[in-house]
Image (tube, rainbow, N blue to C red; front, side, top):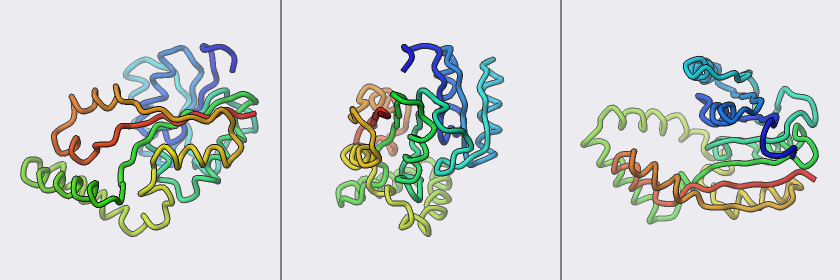
Length: 212
């Protein structure tokens, strides 16, 4: 990549623009893309509130509306587990990257099917029902939406570092690595309620890979 400033950055699945705004604050040229127009409206609102210039556009992570070799860096946060075809998505990400461009993907083991983790999530839901009915309603709606389609999402229960690392390597990326974001997890634990901390014991991680 061209040093560490002035990069052309693409935030895929930008949502409310969390990563896009961080990179814009670092003086990079940033584009955020999301399949949800409501999320894009929120991202634009957040950018205006912080007086940051970011280009937001509607698009699918598995079929990006950009030319080949357009970006130096592609980032995403909590996206991989939502994708029906993560292999196709990564192929697209590689396509729009310039040679020596990098992918940075942040994720976590949100829906680990192991018994211990299922029990932790069950306890978390019970506490939330008692202490925060509004948040419990949100989780209920979330579960109703994803339950019918989770079998169609290959990484729904398997967004662990070794799986994501293997995916990046299989799609031809080099210098692939993963690192736990323990400091980020600790920060979130300070600002999230007890049920969240119970349900999400495993730390977040960053997966990285470079295009040849």
